[in-house]
Length: 361
Image 1 (cartoon, rainbow, N blue to C red):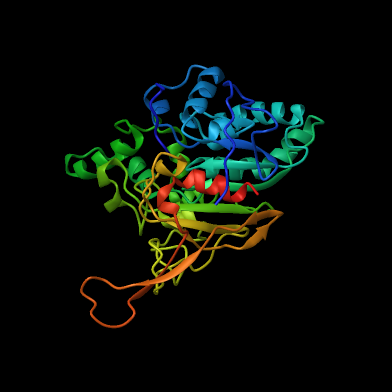
Image 2: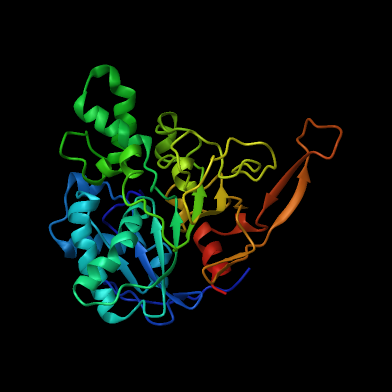
């Protein structure tokens, strides 16, 4: 659900590209497969709806410039003023059709989503084969999806936004500030677009049929909007998306971590983790310090923690380096201290670079 302004260990490829739907060449691949990007919520679309699909594509291009744009082969861009089963599906289908006609996924693609892009991706994965086959086109062959700060389970901020839209009372001032930070507008009925689909119950009932495409989850726990949204989100969160959503938990209960025995900071200790995960959803890395938008390549200095590791998911090898160590707090004068797990050196790079360099085997 990254917001944006309309202005502007292994070796990564760096590819100069031109903008547009098809963003690169055969070199712009991950693990030997073409990459398709699906962006997240863009709050400016609510205040200033895009005029046409060209405007939607321009904003989508800007969204990924920090890291992934030059490492992708196609994008599926969509306007946040629409609904997933309405205008968003229509805009996405036009681009799916072009990707199919170009044959970009004939040897499998990897989809990379951020935030609300997780929910949009889930809807597209459930429907794209039926849509394309109805026109006599081959469905896209998808190897896996990489979901950064995935909002497929919704966010309590969307619940608040709809509540404020229908109850604009003065005593709701603290809630209104959090909602305005998230949406960029003073919510009114009929003006919230995809935020409607991000309500926790709505999101969790949209396109939930299991499929054989693994969803690799990358989870943040930092702050956004100066921290004013955190009190209104259940459990730990990244300032926008709750951990229960980012991990792929089957319920919206407040949880602390994607693991019952490992914290977002990597401490080996009992945690309030998810009771269950959606089918084929795998929390790969957690990072307590990185923010909701920082996962896309703009933030360093934060330790990443491996959860599901040293495995192969549908042919995609997941093999992050891992180190276990003990650390004593300054006040601990005896014992070996607490045990921690980390990806060594992960604080020296950003999460997107770490993921790209590791998975690009």
